Structures are given as structure tokens and as C-alpha cells.
Image 1 (cartoon, rainbow, N blue to C red):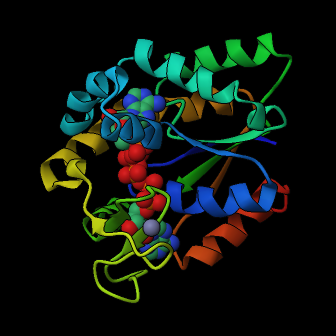
Image 2: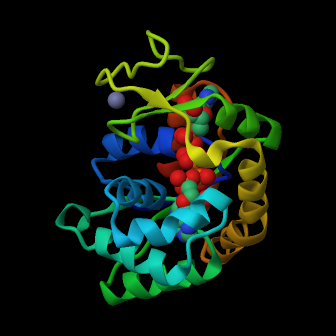
Length: 217
Ligand code: AP5
Ligand code: ZN
């Protein structure tokens, strides 16, 4: 399956993507995670992305599209993928369509996670990530680690993302509304969008998402 996951910052895209990718046996491709990995490795691409991310702005398309394309061409993605955080504006969606058409592929669904703004603000404020692996995600009250500040999975130190400050989150939400939300209409025109509520326990949301992807909504 080829799926795009869309939703505001803090909606739970990364959290859900981990379970959905496992259930569907497809790789989870997150452009945010790819940028953060490049930043921690000090690559040129990471250097280019950092100032935009710190400000809550989108990294320019000429950097992002090439990086996403390279990742999608990896052998583990030949039979499908779950995209998280890409595409993030209409020109990225158009570029993805060109890539898919060139490979005789098409998207199966665009899963839209709906969460009220006050809830995403709470989710982001309490989010903690593992220094060893961005995919180990916790929340200080909703999904707390057994030991404060320590990752349950690998024992790594938990930290708060630099772009999770209140001011940057406000800007990321604005960018979501003005630049990313239009891709929902773009994909509605292709009949691909399934919208679910991302409120409730993590496993309830996963169940809802799997049912929606099976067309049982
Ligand atoms: P990115 O990393 O993609 O961030 P985002 O879209 O802002 O999304 P988040 O990672 O903040 O949230 P999430 O929805 O994954 O939520 P999570 O599962 O962590 O992008 C960061 C930056 O990179 C962008 O601002 C931009 O600069 C750049 N970038 C990335 N892609 C780009 C692109 N294509 N083009 C240009 N620039 C790009 O959950 C949040 C918290 O809630 C966690 O603590 C979690 O434990 C908790 N939680 C999750 N589900 C639940 C639940 N059901 N109940 C209670 N708590 C929950
Ligand atoms: Zn960890």
C-alpha cells in the first residue's frame, strides 16, 4: 500500500505511523525524521534545513523533494510506503504525483488525522523524544515512560524538540493551515482522502485508522 498521512503538528502522525507501518509491513518515511537525522549527523542537507525548522517554516522544496525521492527509491519501499510529513504543500504533492506516475504507481489513500487545536498544543507541550531514536516517542502525562526522562525501549535519554517551543508551535500551526491543508482538497479531487478523529487512546486511533484504510468507515 502507498499511503500519505496528513494532520497538524502534534496530531500523532509519527505515533500512528509506527503502528500502521508495522501492521501493513511497509516502511515509515518521515521527512521530519530524515531532516533531524541529517542535523544530528551534521550533513550539508541538515545545515540547510535547520534554520527553517527552528523557525517553524517549511524547508524549501528543492531540498525536500530530492531527499524524499531518494528515500522512496530505497529497495524497502518498492512495494509500498507510509509517508509522514510529505507532501506538505501542493507543489510537493504535484512532484509526488510525477514521481509515482514515472514508476507506474499510485497512492491508495490519504489518511487525514483530525484533532482540535487545543489538544495538539497539549500533545506537543508534553512530547519527549529519545536521543537514540526519534521513533521512540513519549508524552509526560498521556504515555509516560516508566522512569522519568528515560526511554522504555532502549534506555536512552529523553529530550524536548527545539521546535516545540510555544512560539514556534504557533508558527507551525499557521504554516499547516495555509500551506499544508490545501493538499487535502488536492487529494479529495482524486477521491483519496479518508478522515478520522485522532482523539482517544493511541490504540483506539490505530484501530480507527486500520478500519478506514480497509474502507470500513
Ligand atoms: P515534522 O517532524 O513532520 O513535524 P510535524 O508535522 O510538526 O509533526 P510532529 O512531529 O510535531 O507531530 P506528530 O503528528 O508526528 O505527533 P507525534 O506522534 O509526535 O516536521 C518538523 C519540521 O520539519 C517542519 O516544521 C518543517 O520545518 C520540516 N519539514 C518536515 N517535512 C517537511 C516537508 N515535507 N517540507 C518542508 N519542510 C518539512 O505525537 C505528539 C505527542 O502526542 C507525543 O508526545 C505523543 O506521545 C502524543 N500522542 C500521540 N498520540 C496520542 C494520543 N492518541 N493520545 C494522547 N497523546 C498522544
Ligand atoms: Zn529509545
